[in-house]
Length: 367
Ligand code: IPM
Ligand code: MN
Image (cartoon, rainbow, N blue to C red; front, side, top):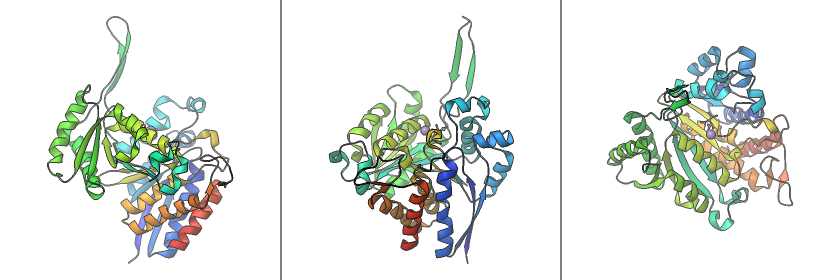
C-alpha cells in the first residue's frame, strides 16, 4: 500500500520562498522513485501573511497545519525597518513562530551542528581543531522558560518603569525534553552534555535535580555538566568533545546560533521541532532580507529540514541519508553559493536554483 502523507508548506518571507522551492523538489523525486505520495498544501505564514490577511498565523493556515502529518516552515521576518510597519504582537516572531510552537507543543528542538570532514573549509575554526568534521546534536527545550513565562511591564512605587519576565518550567516540561536527549545520547556515543547555570539560577538547580532523576533510567549514558558560559568557550576551542547537548530554551537559542558560527554559516543549520503529536521542520536561521530575490541563498538548511522530516516523521531513514549525501556531494564537487562562499580557484559559485538542480540530480542517481 502506498504511504500517503500530507504536508503543510509555509514558505515564509524574504529568502523563504526561494529556498523552499528547491526543498520541495525532494518530494517529487521520492514519489517517482518510491512507493510513497506527498500532498503539499502551501499556506501563508509570517510577515507576508500579516500584510495579505491581517494575521501572521491566519486561522486558515492553522487549519491546514492541524490537518497535516507534518509541517515544513521557511524562515520568516522582515528587516528591522519593515518590521516596524507591523504591530508588535503580529510581528512574525511573536505572532507566528511562538504560537506555532505552542499550538503543537513542540518541546524538543533538534539542531544538528554538523560539517562533514570534506566541508570543514566552511568553518572559521583552524583545520587542526576540526579536521574530523563537527558532529554535535544540540537539543533545545522549545516551549518553556523565559520565552513563554509571564510578562509584565509597569511603574513601581518610586515611579520607575519596570519589567518582569519569568523563567518558568514544570518538572514534566523538563523531564520530557531530558528523556528525548537521553534517548538520543543512548543511540549515539552515550555521552550527554547538560548545559546550565546552576551557580546562579534556581531554574538550573531544579533542571539538574530532574536530570539526576531521569539519569537513573539511563545509567549507560555518561552525563557531563557544563555551565552555559563555559560551554560557549568550549564550543569554539574544542567542539569535538561534544556529542549530544541539552539545555533550556534561551540557552539553546544562543548556543545554537554559535553552532552556526563554528560551521561558518547559519545557512548550514536545519532543525526539527518535535511535539507529542506533530512536528515541524525549519531552518534555524532568519529570512535574510538583505539577500532576498538575488537567487544566491543556499538551500541546504531548508533541504536538510526535509531530510530531517523524512527520517523523524515518516521513518524514511535511508532516503533521508541520501538527501544528506546528495548535498554533501555537491559541496565536495566544489560548488557553492555566494552567501556561503567567495569565489576562488577551488570553488565554483552557482545560484540557489542551480545548487538545487545539482542536489536533485545526485539524489535521483542515489535513489
Ligand atoms: C530561532 C529564532 C527564534 C527563537 C525567533 C525568531 C523567535 O531565533 O528559532 O532560533 O528565538 O527561537
Ligand atoms: Mn535563534
